[in-house]
Every structure is written in C-alpha cells, then in structure tokens.
Length: 126
Image (cartoon, rainbow, N blue to C red; front, side, top):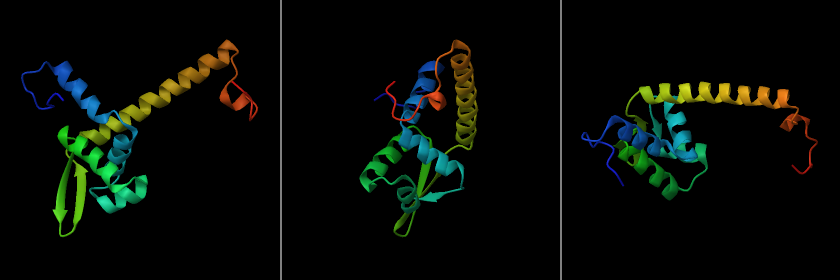
C-alpha cells in the first residue's frame, strides 16, 4: 500500500490516497459517528455499526493509517476522534453533492419518461 504521508508524491496522488481511506461504507459510517461527537468509544461504535470487533478494528486501522482518526486508550476502553475537523466538513459537502446528484437524476428520469422507483409497483421486475 502506498503511504498516505509521502510528501514527495504529487498532490493528486495524495488526494487519491485520502479517498482510498474513505472508500468503504463502514469507514464512512464510522467517520459520520465521529463527526457527530467529540469522541466515540469502540463499544459505542460496535453498537452503532453492528460489526464484529475484529471487523471494526480493521476499518479503524485503515482510518488511522490514512490519518483520518486518532485513538486514545483510557483504562480498558479505546476512544476515537477525528484527526482533523475538516473531515466532518468533507462528509457534509459529499452529502450535499450526492443530494444534488440524486435530485438531478430524478429530474432526468422524470423528463425522459422512464419510471422512477416510486412509480414502479412493488414486486415488479425491473
């Protein structure tokens, strides 16, 4: 795996590596949880995601490798937080972009005469 912190790499490669760190729904979910609170315990993340501890641990390892989260052990509990508050901003912008894209796609479908999901009867093939 390429190292995220390779300062000799062109900026577009560094950006691509950032998005590799984001490229899994579980990691996005974890980052959203961390965006909503100053810190979240692993126990709370397990409850919120429904993952097994080993799977969550693997995703947290990737997020740490890409410098997206930081962890702190307190007694027997591990707590995580965003390494940079801008990660929450990035997720919010992505949410706005996706909402706009979905809205545009819905409008295009309506204008093309193609049935939208809402107009397709339940149980229909398609």
